[in-house]
Amino acid sequence: LQPDNIGLKLRLGEVYLATYEASAARDIFKSLTELYPTSDRAWASLGLLEARLHNFERALDALGHALTENPMLPAVQLANGELLLLDGDFEAALASFEAAQKLMPNDPQLDARHGQALLAAGRHAEALTHLRTAVEGGFDAAEVQRSLALALALNEMYSESRRVLGATEKDPNGDYDVIAGYLDLQRGQYPEAEATFKSVADARSSDPASVNLLAASIYPQARFEEAVILLLLSHELDPSLETVDTNLKKARAARAAEILAEYALPVKALPK
Image 1 (tube, rainbow, N blue to C red):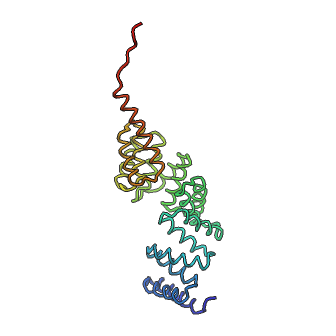
Image 2 (spheres, rainbow, N blue to C red):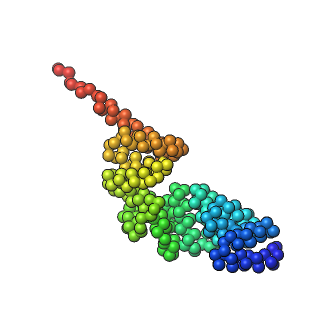
Image 3 (cartoon, rainbow, N blue to C red):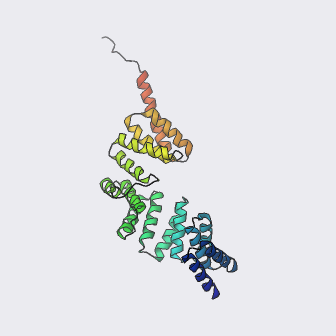
């Protein structure tokens, strides 16, 4: 049980938030977690505020405390999952979203985030279902539409993917370009895909997936040596990526065959 005055103090913190005094609100919520360390409401309020302030590590810590005390908090499960998704912990994010879905099964925002986590985890068919539901339910921000376009492309629904993507604007992170390049790649428009992926790889030079995509657009143009160089770079950036390792072996084999063909001596038939 929680003392009655915790509710008054939580409301005071909310008043500070409403008047844009985030620092004062944070002080109140933090003091409540110290006074009432088992209060799910205090931890939840602190965690949600830290998330709004982009203090993601602190937010995850506070939200984790709230869920330890009471896992039946759908808004907290959603916020926790969103932060875990941003942090790249897709499996943990999925666990939060799945818990939240049981508590609020018809929430479009939750469907969107759940779909994005499934997409990141490679579960493309399931992701598509959730992302469609989110957009149809009205949670259709541009970044959600781009996720839907990607899910459609990965499920080989290229025409619909291009239509959805075309209805959104480009983004500074280059996600639009990645999807557009992937669609060009699937249509066999390799020079167009290469031009797109070159700009993406230049902007994300430390991202092995972007370098791999550039190599994937060069390989079908029979430029095997360039593909090998790019895939070696991608492999150095992250040696654990199986797709890059497989592509590198394929490109090396193609380049080796090319070299053999270059140095092969013409063989004449022996006279009878």
